[in-house]
Image (cartoon, rainbow, N blue to C red; front, top):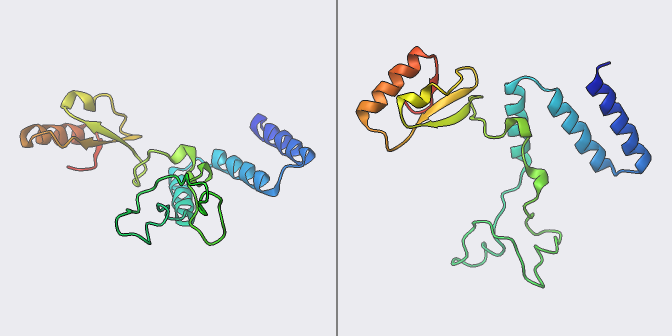
Length: 160
């Protein structure tokens, strides 16, 4: 048994002794599972699975008035049903809907998306972890240079 597995077992026993809710135990078990995952593909699949269960967060009563857009705003009214989390009303934004920490900021291809403005910035990238996204302000000539250099360095370009 490794040190991390031993620590996880100790933490679980403390959770059970303290009378933690089943939800807290489930969250902790999921965190352990996330740390155990090594494959980027597994993390991306987990992120996709979590996102599928996430509700679409809409502004309160945006469905009632045309002038109120759907873009999220936190409800602050004293009689707001949404703020009071009444049954049948849309869900509020919470930290629990967030994806796994290891999969954050990853492109669906599994690479970190790095913005590149010139050929020199390609030298800072790791071809195993990073993918280049050429900035929109870069012209045709410099774009071609960046793509050619990236090909020789085996760096993936997301928008060639």
